[in-house]
Length: 294
Image 1 (cartoon, rainbow, N blue to C red):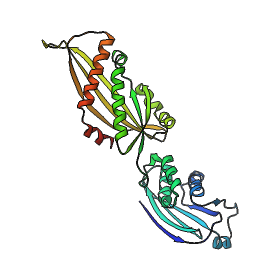
Image 2 (image 1 turned 90 degrees about the vertical axis):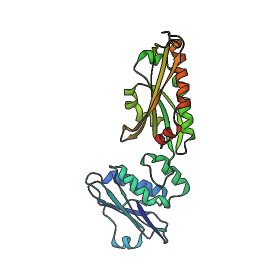
Image 3 (image 1 turned 120 degrees about the horizontal axis):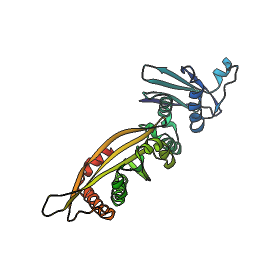
Image 4 (image 1 turned 60 degrees about the horizontal axis):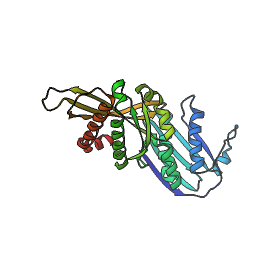
């Protein structure tokens, strides 16, 4: 939530920045979060002398004044300016933890005063905050999670390819998502450990991890010798404070197809897992998938 008011004034020289209400031990970090945003995108900021400023300077020079008030779970920030070219007065609150709460509140207050190019850059660099003012096009990275079953993982590459291509298409067609790329195949512990680094490497802010399970079992039917089945689980992750955080899961209803023979060869399993995957994507509910992707 943010309230903003703007009034004309006249001053183009560098301004002083004062921040009040910081928690002990966070003073420097908070200054280093707020100062670059204002100086880069709004107005030049100059350092306050060690001895402070005189009352005359306070009356004549332009100032940015930021006040922080903490409640049990919320940070409330207010900002006011004096003798700046455009008067800025705003308030915003955040329930995020430090330092995201500082980033969110200062960006929310100042957003409508940013230039078009600054808005684009701010939204790109702070996509993890999901700022209301930014278009929410999540940069989505697709990752395949290995099945620990060696027999299945060694004979399911065709199924993985089929499903990866279809999931890529769904992501590309979804209005709120931007497909960044396919990172490859990883074991579950590797994904949890390396997930944040993969998101950073690909400049993505959402990971869509898909996991396959399948089996080919003999059938007692007089017409079919076996049944091949495959099912898929989707898990969405984001990075937060260096950890890979799961946002939600979606299990796609398993698909089963009849097979006229039953063999244990890798090529046989590869072929029929691929068939099952192609049938699965024809029958899965795109409506349910799109609702999950929301």
